Every structure is written in C-alpha cells, then in structure tokens.
Image 1 (tube, helix red, strand yellow):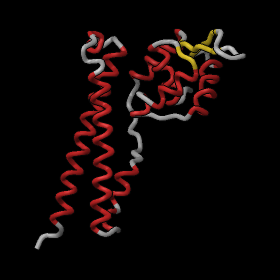
Image 2 (cartoon, one colour; image 1 turned 120 degrees about the vertical axis):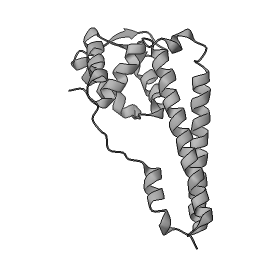
Image 3 (cartoon, helix red, strand yellow; image 1 turned 45 degrees about the horizontal axis):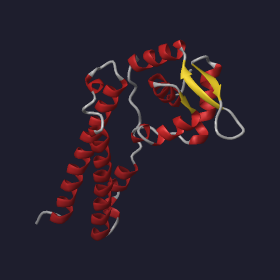
Length: 185
C-alpha cells in the first residue's frame, strides 16, 4: 500500500521526471504549502515506490564523483495515482497548532492574547501574498485553464490557499475586535 508521501511524490513525478534533490526542494515549496516531508523521508519512499514498480530511475552524469538518479512515474505509478485521486475522501484529523493555541487564549493576559492574534494574522498575510504571487505567475499560461494540465491543478490549489488565508485573516480581524470589546456590560 502506498503512503500519502508516496502519492505526493507520484504527483510530482507525474508532472515530469526529477531527482531526489528536486523532490525534496519541491516538498518545501510549492507542495509544502499543503503537505510536508523531510529530505530524509523522501529517499526511503522513493526506494519503496521503485520496489513496488511505481517509479523507475535512470542514472545520469552529475557534477562530482557520483551519478544522479532521475526518477519518473511508471505506467503503474500513474494508474495508482489516478486511482488514489479518484478514491473516496476520508476525513482527516486536523492538527492546527495556531487554533490549538487560540483555543486556550483565555489563559493569558489580554495584551499577550492580542499579540498572539496579530502574529498569527501576520503569518497568514505573508502566506497570502506568497500564494497570490505564485498564482499570478501562472494565470497568463493557457494551460492554467486546461483541467488536464498540472498548471491548472497548481492554479486552483493556489486559489484554495488564497481563499483559506483570506478567511483566516477575516476571522483573526474578528477575533481582534472581540478582544477589544471584552465582556458585555
């Protein structure tokens, strides 16, 4: 059975062949916007995917004494990715450290609470700006509107990120107002 990380890797390799280093870099951004994996997790997962014949590699000359491996999804890997994408969604537990802290906001003094909310808002604002910049870099590409293109998927997931960051900022602004109002008289 393929892990979620395996499907993330297959999704990257389905777009085009890549080295393990390329995969690790892309796990930081753009995939890191919604799914993360460390460099040390990627190579063992590539080995499992290759053992299961979902990916394959070719050796190519590289700078330095060792060759590089360029991985690509096999036909079986593409079939597994398609089946996974089309499968039933299973509700996932949410692990949101920000919300967990805000849930206990009552435990700190009002100034600390306001500071936490403002810091959270700043993080969401920075992420929103990054999502918008990345989305804006693809909106003029005709492939961004072709549902069979990876660029389309990139654009629409970035749009989802934009909308969720805007909603988070709106909620944090509301929370700031709630903190300022205090208890009703």
